[in-house]
Image 1: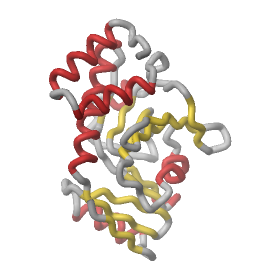
Image 2: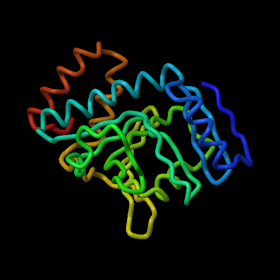
Image 3: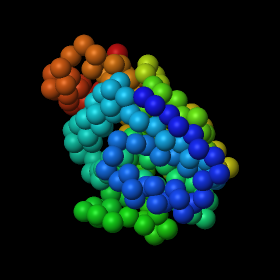
Length: 204
């Protein structure tokens, strides 16, 4: 993983760079003139891919409709902030985003849930950016533990025990399933996870 932090970058240059790098494995985070560029390492992509499989399996087995858009860019010029979550999902607002291929942050809802893999920590305060852009829930994984952050009325995040989108999901157990990816094949893990969800997600 490589990280570059550039200061005094105008919004116009940030937007132009996003267009230039479209489709490349570079994550760009922008906060009022400071631009951080990060490449993604193997460990990061390992957990990102597996976590996405687990969330999709969870929604499928629970019969919860979900619209996923992966690592797309969210930016708002008025606030001079922008970032790219590892994975993003519309759950409460799935119907509004169903089959949409264009997104307008000024008209469309932000995702109900985003995932952040933090095996390599950003130099910028991404949670402050998420809060300013109004993301209601962020799950953060630091390589061992998952923390659920929910946006409060005061505009700040609080760490909570359960998710709004998946209230019956034991978050500690979800982290254990994610870590089992180091021991099991992906297919074997997803099959076992599916059985666990269908059994009512007993606390381990």
